[in-house]
Every structure is written in structure tokens, then in C-alpha cells.
Length: 80
Image (cartoon, rainbow, N blue to C red):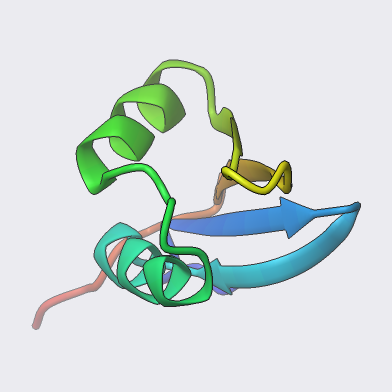
């Protein structure tokens, strides 16, 4: 993984990746377009910080698995 990427957040449905992003704000905004019943950013952040994953089911019974993968080689943005 690129050393400048801190984490990747992934939405999985039926064992297939539906969407992935490196920014939680963008991830939630786009996922809400795909699935309007997506939990709030604060709820996802709290569960991802605590466990690294979160499960939720829509009103129609579709199950989603949200995972966060941290980059162990992350060095951040270097400023000169």
C-alpha cells in the first residue's frame, strides 16, 4: 500500500466489495447515495475506532460489513 495512505475503509455486501475510500467523510457521503440507510459518520467512526469493523442491515434485509484497514507503513505527508 502507498506509504502516504493512512487507511482504507471498505463496504462489503455478499462477500463483494461495493465501495472503498481512504476518507471517512467521502466514504459516508457516497455510501449514503448507494444505500440511504447507512449509519451516520459518528456511528461508523466510533465502531471502527473500537473494533475496526461494523455490521448493519438495511430495511430490505441487505447486510453490509464495513471494515477499516490501517496501513502499517504509513509515514504521513512530509513537509519541506
